[in-house]
Image (cartoon, rainbow, N blue to C red; front, side, top):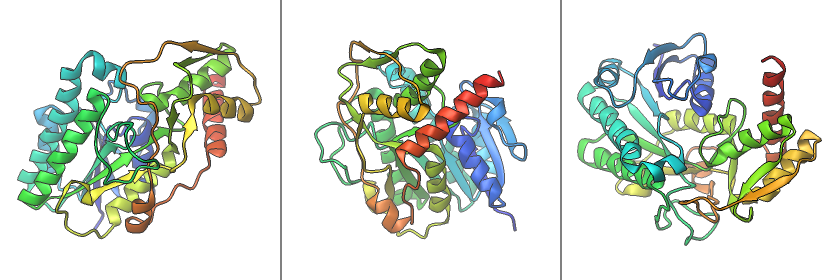
Length: 319
């Protein structure tokens, strides 16, 4: 019998890579997306599409009646700056929308694994060791990070009290083909566009702030492995939480220099004031994901940036 997967946010950057991978393995894939940021051209031809917000009753009905073996919940408000400007909206989508889907799974009567896209970059804060393990203290620096952590607490609750099968994948800063210039890792898409335009790259603050950049197709593979993994029953928050990153810190200035090198172009760099809610450093350990999911990053930063730049270059040529 064909396995069924629902990908929320499946018309987006990461979600579309996840949908592609599950279709390639023979799953029946449904995409739930309101297309507020997702793009029709990202949607795989063989996927079924349901157009709605994750906060809507129709989305709950889809989950409740769909008999999905896996729900991969990637739809979210992902812009840290927007979360600072409008934390109520951020919470309504990232907490309210997640609860809407969790309740639908609870009432479905179907054994569904619920894989939540969390943040390894935003929830740990600055005062932790790096690379940061899953059990480190949580101290989000933005409303966005707070909503992701709150949603994980709800996942833990639903697992313990209602016996639901929940997993949280805590992504580092994901970049790659199809990326939009939103969120912190959106800097790669922005830099690619600036290089192609021949305009200076804007770096906020000193540029010494570090991030853990992980390639989008590598992240999609983590979702597939998480769907298949045999995992022990959770008893606390971090039991079913997995960091999906490289464990390597890269400063924004080093990122800009590496991207220019692989693109074969030199572009001026301009500095702007630092942004509110931005961490100074972030880097997460993938050791647990390797041990329990069998996942490890496969694409180096050089190769990933080269593939990403070539994607944007080709798209520009065909525009």
